Length: 176
Image 1: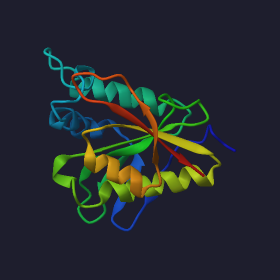
Image 2 (image 1 turned 120 degrees about the horizontal axis):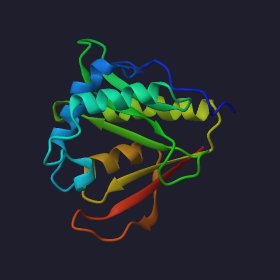
Image 3 (image 1 turned 45 degrees about the vertical axis):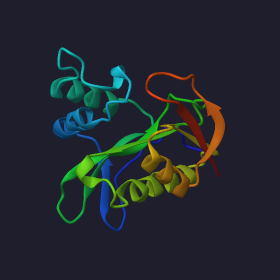
């Protein structure tokens, strides 16, 4: 298996998933501003306004230099507008050989099946290159995301992160 292989451009019926560019930083920052208030503080804009668009652009530049699957920008084919991201991150709940699926879409794109469609493309790629298992964490209150993961073949493991003011973080797994 070629785990050093990086996710590259993919197309679905309605979407193009492509490597992130510095020009996507403003939309990625918008995602930060739209997050549910129950998301922990380290995943929200801090009192100093960070991360800024430039902070995110720096992260995108650094990620492009790494040899790992990575995150793809999701855009609609018909309008070419960026609506979020989807991909695999090497850290998370599994071993380095078992990355975590990550996705986030702008609120305006919720409820249209885009997360499922993008996730299906990434999961299919992961299977094709030989991953045996993928993980995904999800907040217990995020019913829509839990449905997406279920449609993608992820099952809750029964592992729940400690209770916090933000709810419970549930661990899901997808085996091939």
